[in-house]
Length: 361
Image (cartoon, rainbow, N blue to C red):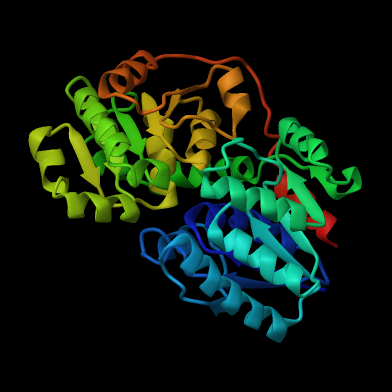
């Protein structure tokens, strides 16, 4: 059996780390990794392959960045050409990026079965590109690997056949368990940044709804500056966010005006785990970081209007904070320090990758 796995962005590298390892332990499956190049910066791509021990991709399509339509279109063309050469029995896609949608569409047009890891997530906000990507991918897929009970319910409500849905748990939980000890041993990020455990806030911002809206982005940055006057804020800046702030001319003033706001380059996965585990609060618009915060029992503030991870809101580990004004952001982040949620475990038992690999055979 030949399986083509499509990856292209940081969250997909993380998920593929454990799933690809599990697949390689099963005789009879030949996995072909295809990297679209959606994330191509070394800090967003190469370092993850090294740290997570992911095999080198058989194909690196080198698509790079661009508008949603242009990027997805170029990916669709290149993936189709790759599938025609490889003639796979199945295509595996992860999550909700443009790489996910392009991989699913290319496979569907060629009548190749599609398996979707992280199926069934819904924010119910169709203005989010990620929501469109995940809905369309789910309705193209013939194997849907749902991380939670709520994800299963979403798929059933949309008319997906129940025999195609498999509640396997969350592969990111597998990764967090697998690499936590390695991060403790190898990461020196706390020392490098002169951070005291549980005495700093970790912030990540990258979604277009925030970065491309000048008012929302200004509110977030002003709010983080206010927080940094009380407690240090570490801000690994996403390439998308950096480009926008450079165009606005605001990047130099962030650190200069507020020394405790530490604007740094993106970090590798092991360093990120250590920052998440040791933060007092995490403020983010990332879906994956919301979960990683929960894995390490770190309070989280999601700077969005909604989230696809409703379980974390309902259990009290996460709180939504639409970035409508800086003062609300400041108050929500600072008040989250020391908060605890309910004792829940919605993401399985850390064996999602093994279950997915077994179901692919």
